[in-house]
Length: 97
Image 1 (cartoon, rainbow, N blue to C red):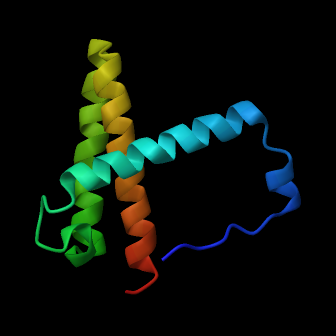
Image 2: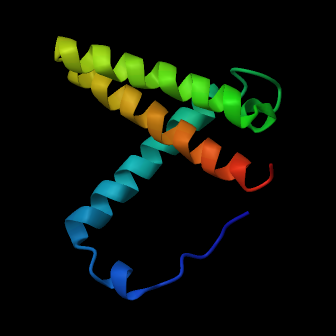
């Protein structure tokens, strides 16, 4: 299901560079979801409750911290995508719980 983004005054102020960054980041989020869709269960993240999703988010934050400490830019980008996805999942699940 696709939702329309409401155009507001705030959205009109987004620069081309910012739009590119958000579009690129969201593409990476989707790629990661497709690669790991069935990682936890046949229905993926949709079967997890908020508590479990938050626990997994905390794990990703810890992995990001280790990546930053090591200066591992590939890991930093990968974990940032994981964190964004879990935040998105939490956002969606919170609408139905």
